[in-house]
Image 1 (spheres, rainbow over the protein chains, first blue to last red):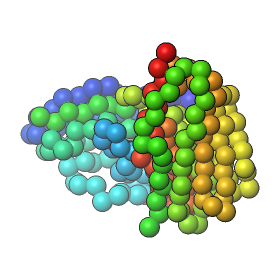
Image 2 (image 1 turned 90 degrees about the horizontal axis):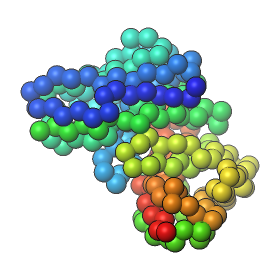
Image 3 (image 1 turned 180 degrees about the vertical axis):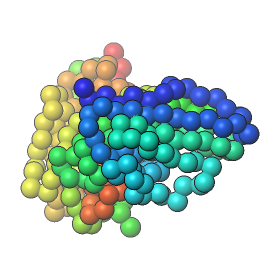
Length: 116
Length: 111
């Protein structure tokens, strides 16, 4: 099973709402990632979790709050978002963090977020 | 600054034809280069991974080449199919835990 499952697939929220994105994998991967992708642009790294600990935060605004409750789950809590935060949010996982050639990143299908 | 440049930005070809996508990078130190295929509204899927010692790697009708001296890579698609319509992204890993993504080439295959 090489699947990374993201829910929900689509999300529409107002600027005052609080919502969460969920990501799950059962491949035994110990590194999990959140990316943000705007239309016709490449994914931008937001956060990296390594062995359930936040190891990289790419200067992401505090209205995005990641959480890794266990080695299989990764959440992204959203609060007071802006319309420019509308994007495809991708979750990925790999066996360990880093770009070793044995470390393939598996991506989920993403959550399409619209902020009104 | 690490950069990955891809060309062309978009490409339209007829079904059955071959095409070649280009990727130039200035990532240092260099660890490996990956090509991904991303269907619209989906996550990227890995096609090939190449280190500096590998010149060519194939995955079905996809063949990637790497010239580590000139820091160039190409992805050749043979006998294109409608399902090849997607964005193709070149990603380079260096010495850090953060990869550098290219902007991608949008490929459209027409019947």
